[in-house]
Image (cartoon, rainbow, N blue to C red; front, side):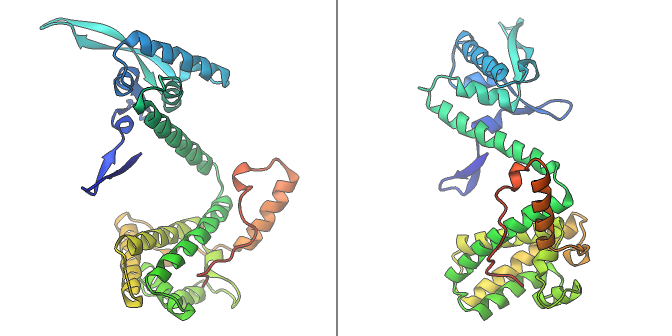
Amino acid sequence: MSNQDEGSGLPHLSPFEAIRRTADDGTEYWSARDLAKILGYTKWANFIYAINKAKEACENSGHSSLGHFAGSSKLIRAGKEAQRKIEDYQLSRYASYLIVQNADPNKPIVALGQTYFAVQTRRQEVADELTGLSEDQLRLLRRSQMSVYNIQLAEAAQHSGVVQPIDFTIFQDHGYMDLYDGLKAQDIHEHKSLEKNQEILDYMGSDELAANIFRASQTKQKLERERVQGKEAANRTHHEVGREVRKTIKRLGGTMPEDLPTPQESIQQLEKKEQRRLKRGPQLEKFDQLPEARSDQSES
């Protein structure tokens, strides 16, 4: 987790991210010795107490501590020529989180560590959840996210002077045209062979939705960061972002948005199927919050 270094505009790396290591098999871990230094422990014996408490919490939560606290050792200099071996642990993210939870709360850095590992652990949980989603479930999730980003984009554009509905339609077209090789919203509608009352966002696959989420998110940020004022300036900003997103897709060898397949089923049809599935079996917690109806300000 990083933030901005005030005054310099340069990214500031969390001290806990800076000591993260990668094993030969690609898994991440933290050295207990490194973590002890960051947390301000000068005596290993005192830190072992926090480790043992964390192990106990791990076992009580139903996890084997052996999988999260891997015993290891490291060599340190004991003199000009001599070296000696000291005890260490290779800690998983979860183990590190439990340790900072059980560390001395009077140390200011402990609170920072608790926040860092809590956020990183939740990010990994979300990533694991998304890995198991089907294409239909990803479409539902990203379509819901697209609604949120479109509302935020509309608010940012309004602050820049894009007020009237017709102005916002033109503003949206500037983003679409550079992302879709010159196609405006209506052109995309025709390209997808949709009926008059069918919305283009409801007939996008998860990858196409992801590209548009990135476009909307980056445009919103650029409008706000640069305090863009005026309809024409806002249009140019959306134009620039759409062009850069397309260039990125091309540089990475991806499929252009207009060449991605159009799903046969709409988002509304998928929602009905998901509702029926949830009634038949155990509910997927991650979909409990999906809205049944949206009120996008920018549907095309």
